Amino acid sequence: MIRIFHSPISLIGNEIGPGESQAPSHLTTLAIFPNGRRPRQGMYLANHVNGISLQIESNGGPVSIDHLRVEPLLELKGALSGSLMELPMIDQFGQLKNIGWPGKLGSVETLRERPRWPSSNAKEETLSTKRQFQTECRDGFWWFVDEQGEPFWSLGVTNAGRGSLVQVSDREELFADLPDQSDHRFDSAFVQIDEKEFIDFYYSNLIRRFGPKFRRKLGIRTATRLHDWHVNTLGDGSAEVVRDRFPGPYVATVNSNAIHMDGVGPIPDPFDPSFDQRLDAACQLVARRVLLNGRCLGVCVDNHQVWPDRIVSNAFAKKRSAVRDAFLKHLKEQYTDIAALNTAWQSEFHDWEEVSVTPTMIQDASRQETGSDMSTAHSLLQDCDSLLALFANRYFFRCRLAVNKNLPGKLFLGCQIARFPPVVARACAAHADVFSVKVYSAEPSIDSIPEDLDIPVLISGFQFGSCDRGALGCGNNPMSTQTQRARATAYYLVKALQDRRIVGAHWDAYSDSSAAAMTGDTMHVGMVDITDHPHSELTNIFSQIGNSLVTIRTNQSELPIAVAQHLFTD
Image 1: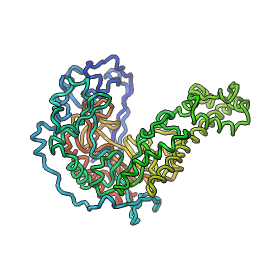
Image 2: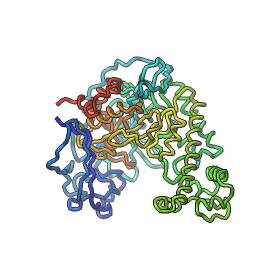
Image 3: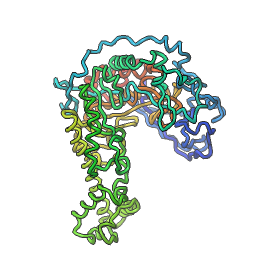
Image 4: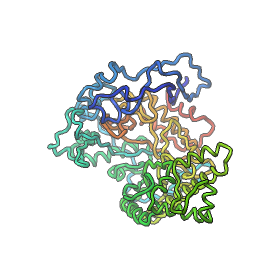
C-alpha cells in the first residue's frame, strides 16, 4: 500500500487580497480566524487558481494521479458570517465553542473523570546528579556522548509543562464562562501585563482538574508521560517543575532579552563595551538553576534567532555605535585611504565619517554583478560579507566565552537560528559545539548549513499540525488528520536520524494553544491539547521511534519513507 507521508500543496494563481474580505470587527484581534484564515492573508477563489504544485514522498514507486480534488476541511457556509464567527466563540476551556471534534472536552465533570496517568518506571535521579555530555563522530555519524561513553540522540520536546497566554482585556465578548477572578484558586491562571489581563487556559484547566496546587502534579504527570513516550530530552522553555522530575537531560537557554541593550536589528551589538557584562549576568541567572539541576545537555543563547539581511547597512545607519566604529576600523585596515575605497566601491565619500552602506548600494552592486562590470560589484559585496563575518564571529565567540566562563563543562549549543546567510553559518560553526537550528519544513533539511561544515546539528524546533481538532492554525506544515500528522512526523524523524550531522530533533511544542491567541501561535501543534489530553496518534509515533533510535540511525539500507512505513499497520 502506498503511504503519503507529507504532501505540501502550493496554489498557483492570483490571490485575492485581505482588503476584499474583511472580518467582523470583533475578530480583528485574532491571530487566525476560526475558519482557518489569517487576518492579513489573502484567499484563492476557484476561478483564480491556474495550477497546483504537489510534492509527494511514497514507498510504492512511481505515483500516478488521475484525478485531484481540493475540498475544505470544514463546511464553511456563509464564509465569515457562519456559526464559527458567532459570539461568544471560546468556551470555558479555551476551545472553539461552536464546532465539535473527537475528544473535545464538554464538561468539568468529564475533565475530572479522565483516567490518571499511571506511575512511571523512570529511573529516580536526584537533582544534583550531574551528567556531562560531549559530541563525537563515530563511523561517520555525529552523536551526543554521555559520561559513560554511550551514544545519545536527543529526541525532545520544547515548552513541556507550559501553556500560553491569551489576552482577555478589550476582548471580553469572545469568551464564555471565564473563571471568576475573585476565585483565588485561579490566581495562577491570570496574569497582568501592561495593565491588561491575560489568561492561561492550559493552567486554568489543570486547576479545575487538580486544584490550585496543581504544579507538583503537573511536573510528575508531564515527566512521567514524556518518559513513557520515550522522549529523552526537555527542549527549550520547559518548566522547572517538569525539569526537576524528568530523569533525562534538558536544554538551558540564555534569554537574549535579559541583555537589555541596543543592537543591529534583533542581534545585540557584540562590539558594545557593555555586551560581555550583560551577557555574563544573563548566563549567571541560568547557571544558578543548572547548579541545582545538573542534568543539563547544553546551553543555547537566544531562541528562534533571525539574522536580518541588512545587518551591515543597519550598522552604518547608526552614526554613533560600537559596531559602526568596528566596521570603519576594518575598512581602514583594508584600504589605505578614502580614495582607495571610493575607487573600489565607485563611491564619492569625502572622508571616513561619511562612509555608509545602504540597501540601494547593495541592490545596485548585485545587479552589476550579473552585468559587464563585475569587479566593482564584487568589491562592495565582498566587503559586506567580510563585515558580516566580522560581526558574526565576534558575536558567537563572545557567547562561547560567556558560556564557558559561567557554565563550565556545558556544551555551547549555538543560538537556535531560524534564518541566516552562509557567512553566519560558518561563524556559528567555528565557535559552537553544536549548531542548533529551527527547521519548520516538511523535511529535516539542513542544506542552509554548508556541507563542508562537519559539525553536529541539533534541530531545536520542528512541528506538524492538523485541522481536525478545533484549533485551526496548523503551523507551517498543515496536515488533514491526526493520522497524517503522525505519518509526517515519523518520516521527518527517521530522515533526521539517518542524516549523519543531525544529533537530535525537538518537537515544538508540548501543548496546543487557545484559538483566541493573538500572537500567531493559535495552533494545533502540541503533543497534548489545551485540556492536557494527549494526541495519541502522535505520541505513539514518539514511543516507537524513541524506543529504536540507535537501530534506525544505524539502518542505512532502507529509504526513510520505507523505515517510517514499518511504524504503521494497515
